[in-house]
Length: 471
Image 1 (cartoon, rainbow, N blue to C red):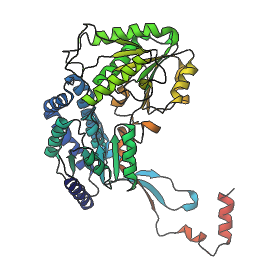
Image 2 (image 1 turned 90 degrees about the vertical axis):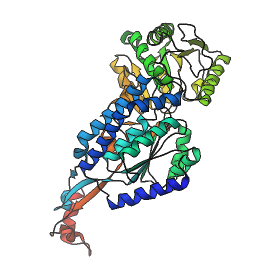
Image 3 (image 1 turned 180 degrees about the vertical axis):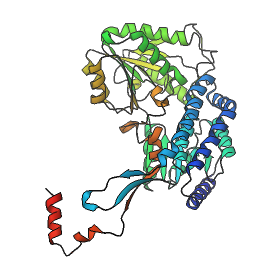
């Protein structure tokens, strides 16, 4: 575990190193990314094993698909574009200020801090790291105390790729996390829960450190007009997005808004889809466990609260297995939910899937608007008017039409939240911009037309300027 003194020393060393070499070349940045890519490929099996150990059971294929694949593809994407992103952007100079030239130069910020959550501990460390390195920064990464094996594996990987003055990984409990967020970083990125995000932002504000917050929220899946919505396909795609990592995904469908007349058909379609993907659960390596006892008990309490308040529960368990001595919760459909239930008041972050019926599409939109703005919103249907209303009348970090979750893995799309689901973006070009200072540069030669507006005021040229430009 990293001590507070070691953390402070690492930060100071990175600051010093950055001041000594504040603008890495495109070639240096690409080479840094290549070292990271090669190490990920070489150490993928040990990383998969570490994440499995932390979860008790984490599907190896889920780790490959949701952590390694997007990490490696993100590196390749950035490598091909870093040189282009670094080019100064030419800008126009107003006629009144000629002759002159203007441009924007993209300058590394300095030392970037990245706070990593437990649910995707590899991808949510590597993704921000790729963006920060592409922009030419030094990086300190704080791993979650809930994934100690992964933290050790990532620390080893990074140490083999980089000097600690370039990139370093720190580990430790919440006290180290607090100390980390209080450092005067040049930018701080946090991924995690909204309540902790508020604390991180408050700590960063003391240093006027800019923050990117990737949070979460109750991301809805909306089934549209039955005449234009393939119910079976929608159920299958929602089931995949919800069961991935046992629902422990910030962009997992949190609940479904369904036309009232279709609820029974939807329940049947979801049961069928879940059962096809997971014909068994107890010994099935494709289905992941809940991360720890704390989260396991929280989800059981949320489900019990719904049952006590009158909810109708459908647990997907084709083989009628028992799950004692495990942290396994199978996908569970929850009907007849009400707003006073805990399951409808906060992000579920687990494999519980409430269904909320609606009578009109306007009611569905009003339900979404009545809550905090979510990180993602999923619409299933082909009705162009409903799609337009989704885009114009709701807010969310991202939107998918006839899909769930996969927008996060698109390298050319920014990823971020809005309101309670976060602020700022990374991934794609937006990630490079987030970790860069867009520095305005105005250049003039020996000819100085501005002298005509110097005091004393009132000359004829000044009056002519007013007539030409203030009209």
